[in-house]
Image 1 (cartoon, helix red, strand yellow):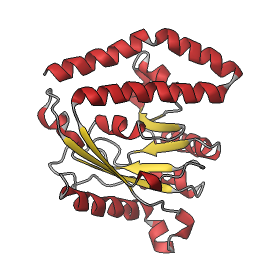
Image 2 (cartoon, one colour):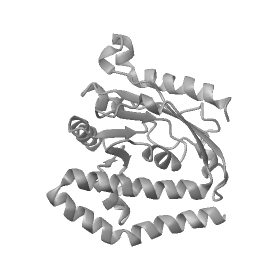
Image 3 (cartoon, one colour):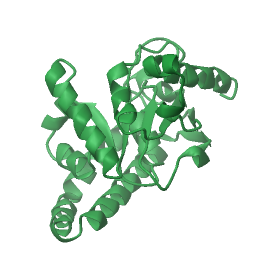
Image 4 (cartoon, helix red, strand yellow):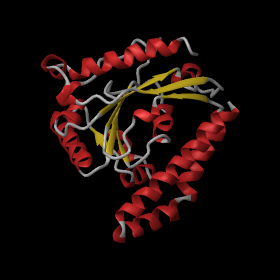
Length: 246
Protein backbone atom coordinates (compact mmCIF):
# COMPACT_ATOMS: atom_id res chain seq x y z
CA UNK A 1 0.00 0.00 0.00
CA UNK A 2 2.93 2.33 0.71
CA UNK A 3 4.20 2.00 -2.87
CA UNK A 4 0.74 2.88 -4.18
CA UNK A 5 0.66 6.07 -2.09
CA UNK A 6 4.19 7.02 -3.17
CA UNK A 7 3.31 6.51 -6.85
CA UNK A 8 0.19 8.67 -6.44
CA UNK A 9 2.31 11.37 -4.81
CA UNK A 10 4.85 11.18 -7.64
CA UNK A 11 2.18 11.58 -10.31
CA UNK A 12 0.48 14.49 -8.58
CA UNK A 13 3.82 16.06 -7.71
CA UNK A 14 4.99 15.85 -11.32
CA UNK A 15 1.84 17.54 -12.63
CA UNK A 16 2.14 20.37 -10.10
CA UNK A 17 5.92 20.89 -9.94
CA UNK A 18 6.34 20.69 -13.72
CA UNK A 19 3.52 23.12 -14.50
CA UNK A 20 6.03 25.98 -15.05
CA UNK A 21 8.13 23.60 -17.17
CA UNK A 22 5.09 22.86 -19.30
CA UNK A 23 4.62 26.57 -19.93
CA UNK A 24 8.29 26.91 -20.90
CA UNK A 25 7.94 23.91 -23.23
CA UNK A 26 4.94 25.52 -24.92
CA UNK A 27 6.92 28.73 -25.40
CA UNK A 28 9.89 26.83 -26.87
CA UNK A 29 7.50 25.11 -29.27
CA UNK A 30 6.61 28.44 -30.87
CA UNK A 31 10.20 28.80 -32.09
CA UNK A 32 11.54 25.24 -32.25
CA UNK A 33 8.83 22.53 -32.20
CA UNK A 34 11.35 19.69 -32.58
CA UNK A 35 13.37 20.84 -29.55
CA UNK A 36 10.17 21.15 -27.53
CA UNK A 37 9.01 17.70 -28.57
CA UNK A 38 12.29 15.99 -27.67
CA UNK A 39 12.68 17.74 -24.32
CA UNK A 40 9.05 16.93 -23.40
CA UNK A 41 9.64 13.30 -24.38
CA UNK A 42 12.74 13.00 -22.19
CA UNK A 43 11.12 14.77 -19.21
CA UNK A 44 8.13 12.42 -19.19
CA UNK A 45 10.31 9.37 -19.82
CA UNK A 46 12.35 10.35 -16.77
CA UNK A 47 9.22 10.70 -14.64
CA UNK A 48 7.93 7.32 -15.83
CA UNK A 49 11.26 5.66 -15.01
CA UNK A 50 11.06 7.05 -11.49
CA UNK A 51 7.55 5.65 -11.05
CA UNK A 52 8.59 2.24 -12.36
CA UNK A 53 11.57 2.25 -9.98
CA UNK A 54 9.18 3.00 -7.12
CA UNK A 55 7.03 0.00 -8.00
CA UNK A 56 10.07 -2.27 -7.73
CA UNK A 57 9.24 -3.95 -11.04
CA UNK A 58 12.00 -6.03 -12.65
CA UNK A 59 11.82 -5.65 -16.41
CA UNK A 60 13.24 -8.09 -18.91
CA UNK A 61 13.44 -6.44 -22.30
CA UNK A 62 13.84 -8.52 -25.45
CA UNK A 63 14.26 -7.49 -29.09
CA UNK A 64 14.40 -3.71 -28.76
CA UNK A 65 16.95 -3.75 -31.56
CA UNK A 66 13.98 -4.56 -33.85
CA UNK A 67 12.67 -1.00 -33.43
CA UNK A 68 13.77 1.21 -36.36
CA UNK A 69 15.35 4.49 -35.30
CA UNK A 70 15.20 6.17 -38.71
CA UNK A 71 11.46 6.15 -39.41
CA UNK A 72 8.07 6.30 -37.77
CA UNK A 73 6.42 3.01 -36.80
CA UNK A 74 3.13 1.74 -35.45
CA UNK A 75 3.55 0.02 -32.10
CA UNK A 76 0.89 -2.61 -31.37
CA UNK A 77 0.67 -4.22 -27.95
CA UNK A 78 -1.52 -6.32 -25.71
CA UNK A 79 -3.01 -4.37 -22.81
CA UNK A 80 -3.43 -5.61 -19.24
CA UNK A 81 -2.33 -2.70 -17.06
CA UNK A 82 -2.12 1.07 -16.73
CA UNK A 83 1.62 0.44 -16.40
CA UNK A 84 1.81 -0.85 -20.00
CA UNK A 85 2.08 2.79 -21.07
CA UNK A 86 5.00 3.48 -18.72
CA UNK A 87 6.73 0.20 -19.60
CA UNK A 88 6.68 0.99 -23.31
CA UNK A 89 6.92 4.79 -23.40
CA UNK A 90 10.21 4.78 -21.50
CA UNK A 91 11.64 2.70 -24.37
CA UNK A 92 10.54 4.89 -27.28
CA UNK A 93 13.69 6.07 -29.08
CA UNK A 94 11.93 9.04 -30.67
CA UNK A 95 8.65 10.94 -30.73
CA UNK A 96 5.65 8.69 -30.19
CA UNK A 97 2.01 9.59 -29.71
CA UNK A 98 -0.19 7.17 -27.81
CA UNK A 99 -3.85 6.61 -28.60
CA UNK A 100 -5.84 7.04 -25.38
CA UNK A 101 -9.52 6.85 -24.55
CA UNK A 102 -11.50 10.05 -25.00
CA UNK A 103 -12.16 10.51 -21.28
CA UNK A 104 -8.44 11.14 -20.69
CA UNK A 105 -8.79 14.44 -22.52
CA UNK A 106 -10.76 15.81 -19.55
CA UNK A 107 -8.03 15.16 -16.95
CA UNK A 108 -6.55 18.54 -15.88
CA UNK A 109 -2.83 19.10 -16.62
CA UNK A 110 -2.30 15.48 -17.68
CA UNK A 111 -4.21 16.04 -20.93
CA UNK A 112 -2.03 19.08 -21.72
CA UNK A 113 1.13 17.00 -21.36
CA UNK A 114 -0.46 14.29 -23.50
CA UNK A 115 -1.22 16.79 -26.26
CA UNK A 116 2.35 18.13 -26.06
CA UNK A 117 3.49 14.55 -26.63
CA UNK A 118 1.22 14.09 -29.68
CA UNK A 119 -1.22 11.72 -27.97
CA UNK A 120 -4.57 11.17 -29.65
CA UNK A 121 -7.92 10.71 -27.94
CA UNK A 122 -10.17 7.99 -29.34
CA UNK A 123 -13.96 8.02 -28.97
CA UNK A 124 -14.78 4.37 -29.62
CA UNK A 125 -18.50 4.99 -29.22
CA UNK A 126 -18.58 7.41 -32.15
CA UNK A 127 -17.51 5.83 -35.44
CA UNK A 128 -17.11 9.16 -37.23
CA UNK A 129 -14.95 10.67 -34.49
CA UNK A 130 -12.96 7.45 -34.21
CA UNK A 131 -12.16 7.63 -37.92
CA UNK A 132 -10.98 11.22 -37.49
CA UNK A 133 -8.58 10.05 -34.79
CA UNK A 134 -7.21 7.31 -37.03
CA UNK A 135 -6.67 9.80 -39.85
CA UNK A 136 -4.91 12.16 -37.43
CA UNK A 137 -2.66 9.22 -36.51
CA UNK A 138 -1.94 8.62 -40.20
CA UNK A 139 -0.85 12.25 -40.50
CA UNK A 140 1.43 11.86 -37.47
CA UNK A 141 3.16 8.85 -38.98
CA UNK A 142 3.56 10.64 -42.32
CA UNK A 143 5.19 13.52 -40.45
CA UNK A 144 7.72 11.15 -38.84
CA UNK A 145 6.07 10.64 -35.44
CA UNK A 146 5.42 7.06 -34.34
CA UNK A 147 2.09 5.98 -32.88
CA UNK A 148 1.34 3.37 -30.22
CA UNK A 149 -2.09 1.80 -29.90
CA UNK A 150 -3.48 -1.06 -27.86
CA UNK A 151 -6.03 -2.46 -30.32
CA UNK A 152 -8.02 -4.43 -27.75
CA UNK A 153 -9.58 -1.03 -27.08
CA UNK A 154 -9.34 -1.29 -23.31
CA UNK A 155 -7.41 -3.18 -20.66
CA UNK A 156 -8.20 -6.88 -20.63
CA UNK A 157 -9.38 -8.07 -17.21
CA UNK A 158 -9.28 -11.75 -18.15
CA UNK A 159 -7.38 -14.21 -15.98
CA UNK A 160 -4.50 -14.87 -18.36
CA UNK A 161 -2.19 -12.76 -20.54
CA UNK A 162 -2.93 -15.28 -23.28
CA UNK A 163 -6.67 -14.56 -23.21
CA UNK A 164 -6.70 -11.30 -25.14
CA UNK A 165 -9.70 -9.35 -26.32
CA UNK A 166 -10.12 -9.24 -30.13
CA UNK A 167 -7.94 -6.67 -31.89
CA UNK A 168 -9.91 -3.90 -33.63
CA UNK A 169 -8.96 -4.07 -37.29
CA UNK A 170 -9.50 -0.31 -37.73
CA UNK A 171 -6.44 0.36 -35.59
CA UNK A 172 -4.25 -1.07 -38.34
CA UNK A 173 -5.30 1.54 -40.90
CA UNK A 174 -2.51 3.60 -39.33
CA UNK A 175 -0.09 1.16 -40.94
CA UNK A 176 -1.94 0.07 -44.07
CA UNK A 177 -2.44 3.69 -45.18
CA UNK A 178 1.23 4.57 -44.64
CA UNK A 179 2.93 1.18 -45.10
CA UNK A 180 4.99 1.94 -42.01
CA UNK A 181 6.49 -0.96 -40.05
CA UNK A 182 4.27 -2.51 -37.38
CA UNK A 183 6.23 -3.35 -34.23
CA UNK A 184 4.37 -5.97 -32.16
CA UNK A 185 4.92 -5.56 -28.41
CA UNK A 186 4.24 -8.55 -26.16
CA UNK A 187 3.88 -7.68 -22.47
CA UNK A 188 3.84 -10.52 -19.94
CA UNK A 189 2.67 -10.13 -16.34
CA UNK A 190 2.14 -6.34 -16.19
CA UNK A 191 -1.21 -6.72 -14.39
CA UNK A 192 0.72 -8.24 -11.47
CA UNK A 193 2.21 -4.82 -10.74
CA UNK A 194 -1.14 -3.45 -9.56
CA UNK A 195 -4.40 -4.61 -11.11
CA UNK A 196 -4.14 -8.23 -9.92
CA UNK A 197 -4.14 -7.12 -6.28
CA UNK A 198 -5.63 -3.61 -6.34
CA UNK A 199 -4.92 -1.25 -4.62
CA UNK A 200 -1.52 -2.66 -3.61
CA UNK A 201 1.53 -2.28 -5.83
CA UNK A 202 4.05 -5.07 -5.42
CA UNK A 203 7.42 -6.08 -6.78
CA UNK A 204 7.08 -8.36 -9.76
CA UNK A 205 8.77 -9.48 -12.98
CA UNK A 206 7.53 -8.18 -16.34
CA UNK A 207 8.74 -9.20 -19.79
CA UNK A 208 8.48 -6.78 -22.71
CA UNK A 209 9.42 -8.15 -26.12
CA UNK A 210 9.57 -6.19 -29.37
CA UNK A 211 8.95 -8.38 -32.40
CA UNK A 212 10.44 -8.03 -35.85
CA UNK A 213 8.89 -5.29 -38.02
CA UNK A 214 5.84 -6.32 -40.03
CA UNK A 215 5.47 -4.43 -43.32
CA UNK A 216 1.81 -4.43 -44.49
CA UNK A 217 2.67 -4.40 -48.22
CA UNK A 218 4.82 -7.52 -47.78
CA UNK A 219 1.99 -9.61 -46.31
CA UNK A 220 -0.08 -12.02 -48.36
CA UNK A 221 -3.45 -10.75 -49.56
CA UNK A 222 -5.24 -12.88 -46.97
CA UNK A 223 -3.02 -11.81 -44.06
CA UNK A 224 -3.35 -8.15 -45.05
CA UNK A 225 -7.13 -8.53 -45.17
CA UNK A 226 -7.11 -9.82 -41.56
CA UNK A 227 -4.03 -7.94 -40.39
CA UNK A 228 -5.35 -7.50 -36.85
CA UNK A 229 -5.67 -11.24 -36.38
CA UNK A 230 -2.27 -11.79 -37.97
CA UNK A 231 -0.49 -9.40 -35.60
CA UNK A 232 -2.43 -10.67 -32.60
CA UNK A 233 -1.28 -14.21 -33.34
CA UNK A 234 2.33 -13.01 -33.50
CA UNK A 235 1.92 -11.40 -30.06
CA UNK A 236 0.13 -14.46 -28.68
CA UNK A 237 2.93 -16.83 -29.70
CA UNK A 238 5.49 -14.52 -28.08
CA UNK A 239 3.44 -14.32 -24.88
CA UNK A 240 3.31 -18.13 -24.74
CA UNK A 241 7.07 -18.35 -25.25
CA UNK A 242 7.87 -15.80 -22.56
CA UNK A 243 5.56 -17.26 -19.91
CA UNK A 244 8.31 -19.80 -19.27
CA UNK A 245 10.72 -16.99 -18.35
CA UNK A 246 8.64 -15.58 -15.49
